[in-house]
Image 1 (spheres, chains in turn cyan, orange):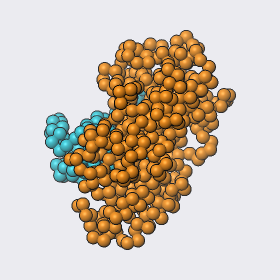
Image 2 (cartoon, helix red, strand yellow):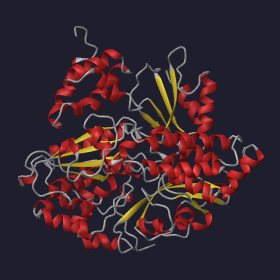
Image 3 (cartoon, one colour):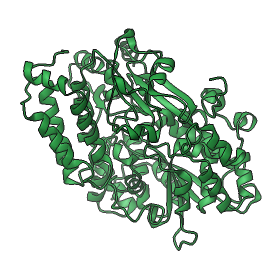
Image 4 (cartoon, chains in turn brown, blue):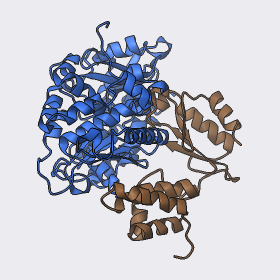
Length: 158
Length: 424
C-alpha cells in the first residue's frame, strides 16, 4: 500500500505495545482505538492498513470492529454526544435531554448535523449511575445533567 | 454504626491518587512486600480465609478461584482485572480506579505473584478514557518506584501490567468474552469448560477478578484473612462492600459498609435519604439491571449475596436501582429489555432472537397495543432463554422480564386493558 493513512506516531505507539502481548492479534483493539483517535473515525483505508499491520484479512478487521459500538465506521461530527438512556439515567430525565438535543440540532438520534458539528447518539450505561443523567461529549464525561447545564455546555463549544 | 471500618471510601478524592499519598496513607505496597516473602500457597490460603465473594456480580469466592490455577503449566499464566463495569446500576469500580489506582495495582501484583503470572491486564471499558489514562499514569509511577517491572523489590519476581481498553460491548464483562476481546476478537463468550483457570487468555491459565475484589487484596495480606473475614457480618461473606444507589433516591452514590451488615431498606432510607419528593417506593432492582426486581415489601432483606439469592433475586454488583411509585414499571422494563436485545452478542439463538422479541412485546404493551396473551407469551419466551444459553446474558435478560411480569402483573394488565400507559 503506497498511501498510508496512519501516521508514524500510530506505528510508534503500536511498536511500544507489541512486547506487552504474546500475539499480534491482541493489538487489534488498541490499533483501532489509536486509528480512530487520529482520524476521528475508521475509514476503509484505515481498516485495511490495520489488517496489513496485524497480518490479518481486512474482513477480519471489519468483523471485529463492527462488533463494538465505540468504533465509528462512518464519519461523526466534531462534537459527538452520547447520552446515556439506560435505566438509572432515564429515571433521572435522560429522555428529555435526548429530545432537547434532537430539537436543538434538528436531527434524530444516530444522525449528524449538516454542518458536521454535532452527532447525537443514545448510549447504553456509561457507569455513572450515581451522577445520572450522564453523557459523553467526545472522550469526556458530563454528569448530573439537566437541560440548563447541557445548554450551557453546548452553547460554550467553539 | 460507630464501629464501622471502611477500606476505600475515605480515600475517594483526587488527593488520594498519587503514589506519594498511597505510600503515606494507605497500604503503600507493604502488602506486596509482605506477599513476596510468603509462599504462593500461603497467600491463596489467606485469600480463602478472607471469604471474599467476587465483587463483579457472580459472588464466587476469590480465594477458591485462585486455587484452581494449576501449579505447572506449559503456557504462561495471566492475571486479568475485569474493569469493564458495564452492568447498568454499577459505578463503584470507576471510583476505585480514579481515586485509588495504586491499591488496585498492588492487589493485581499480589494476585499475579500468587498464581505465578508475569503479565497482567486491566481490561477497562472503552468509555472510561480518563480512568484508563489515570491508571497508565499510576502504572508508570509504580514502575519508576520499582513496584512493577523486572525483579520487583529484589524478589526475583517480575510483572508487567497493561491497560487494555474495551470498545463498547456489555458482553465483555463476561469473563470469557472479555478474554476473546483481549485477544483481538469479537467479544463472544466461550464454551465452558475449559474454565479460564485452565485455559484462559492466549490459552494460558488465567484468573479474571473484578476491580473491587483485587483492591481488597492488599488489606487481606497486611491484616490477615481472618481479620478481613471478620469485617463482614455474615459467615460466608467477608470484607466491606461498595454499594451503589441510583435512580429515585435523594442521595444517589456509593456507600461502603461491612458485608452483610445492612438491609436494602436501610440503604435506601438511611443512606440514600429516601425517595425523591418523599414519594412511596415502587420497586428496587437490587444488584444491577440483570437482577430480578423486588417490590416495596421485600426490602427488609440483608443486602448480600446469599440473603438476596434466598428471596429469588441476586445481589450481583451491589448496584441498586430505586424506582418511585409514580414511574411506570412497564416503561422501565421496556428500557431494560431494549438494552439486553442491543447487547446480545448473537451467538446463541434463544438469546439473540428471544431478547429482540421480548423487547417488541414489552414495547407494544407500554404503548397500549398489547394483547391479553402477551404476558404469558413473555413468560414463555423468557423461559426459553433462561439457562439455555452459553453465558449468563440470557438469564440476565430473562430474569427482569419474569420478575416484573410476575410482581407487577396488574400494571401490565392495566396497559393492555386501557390501551395506553396509565402513567403517560
